[in-house]
View 1 (cartoon, rainbow, N blue to C red):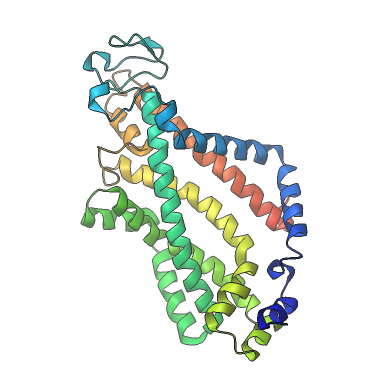
View 2: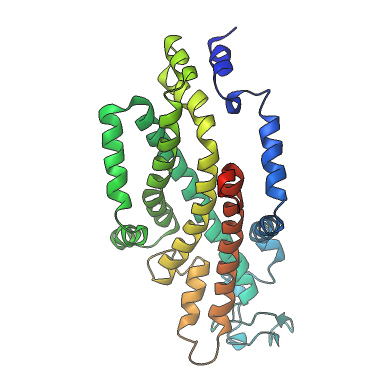
Length: 310
């Protein structure tokens, strides 16, 4: 029997490949019992597919100047195009961009920024949190003081300061979101891993002289996944909203790249003139997207912690 196999026998069922099927089935069954959560999941998957296949679905590329006609600028929802004769179901902005197409392309940028920043923030936060719980002592104190210091400031304030110094850009927004988000994952993983680090299977792994990396990521991490999944689901919705806020304030993605926040900002000046659709429909898309993700996250929280179920 290998060392990992011996330690896995002492660990909870989450680290045993044979016993994983049963908890997964239980979690899936509990999740799909809630119709609202299923509706939220279906809605989010539909939004995701629309964003991925936006170039194939959208009537036009809203940021290709060759496809825009200034004569179609400011058309209300349902108006016909002067250039092509097609219908603008959600209207157009002042440059003649089809708002339906702009929203589909904007969803792509918002989801890409949120997903990429989420992946890097999880990688950094999980590593820091597990290291703090596993090694303890000064390492734990140092990492958690940094986490406490960062979490004492609003995330939007830190992101605004960073982007004010760096300038606009998709890559800069992603880096800023990683910096403001990693601490959430570090604290979440640390709180779970510090309990697991005192259990017998970890002590057995240390006695077998397994490497620190193998113990942390092969044995500790799988037992910290449930709270991490819940936090990640909620944080991706927050990342989308934060990116939209930064773009709305003019420090997010550049004007050459569509995003939901930038589309809302573009129509803000025209609200008083009655052209509500330029900001309204991107705002609805943003609210629906974050709402669907939050519904899924709330249900996952209840599933992984039955004591929270009503």
